[in-house]
Amino acid sequence: MLLVLAAMPEESAPLEARLDDPAPLTVPFTTGVRAVRGTLAGTPAAVVTTGIGIAAATAAATWAILELRPEVAVAAGSCGGLAADVEVGTLIIGESFTWSIADATAFGYAPGQVPGGPERHTSPSDLVERARRAAVATGAAHRSGLMLSGDAFVTAPLAAPMRERFPGALSADMETTASARTCAALGVPFTALRAVSDLCGPSAGQQFHLELDVVAETSARAVEELARVLSAQ
Image (cartoon, rainbow, N blue to C red; front, side):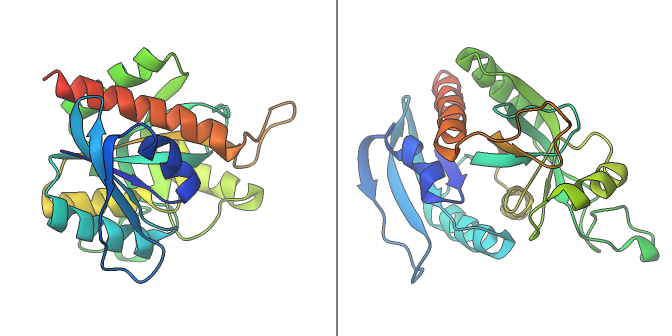
C-alpha cells in the first residue's frame, strides 16, 4: 500500500481525483486532517491531507502509518525553491531531509541536526530510483537531493544564509522532514515528489511563482506514475 501525504486540500485534490473506488476514512482528529482510500494506478493507496507544519505532519503521518500499515510513503504537493538555480515548476525528488532552522551546532551537531537524531534522514536508493523513473515518465523537469523543512516560511532574507548553511539544498517546506522522520521511526520507506511553486529569493529575470493548482498537478502526475511503477514490481 502507498501512503501519500499532502499538507493542504489543494495539494491532495488532484491525487484524490485519481483514485479508483475512493472511500473516505474516519480520522481521530477534530479538524485539519482528511483521509481517502482507494487504488492509484493499480496500487492500493491512501491520500492523507495532514495540515500545515511539522506538528501537523507528524501527527497525521503517525496515525496513518499505525492505522493503514503502508509499505511505502511519499510526500506530495508544493515546496519553495531554495537552490539559486532551481526554477518554478521543477519536481523535487527527496533523497535526504533535514531541519532548516534547527541549530545545535554549539554542542557539536551538524546544521539541521536535532540532538539524538541523524544528521540527515534518507530515502532508500531503490525508492529514489523509482521516483526518478516516475518523474521522467511525466516529462516534468526534475532534480533530486536534499530537502529542508521547518516552521518558518523561507523568504528572501532567510534564503541566503540558509544556502550557506546547507550547500546543495534544493527546496524548503514545512512538512517533509517531519514525515521522513516519522516514517523512519516507524520503519516505512519514504521519499518526496513535491513541485516548486515559489522561489526563496529569486534572481533577477526569474519567474518566481506558479499557481498552487498547477504545481499540485505536476506532483500528482508524478505520484501516480510512482504508483504505477510500484504496481509493476
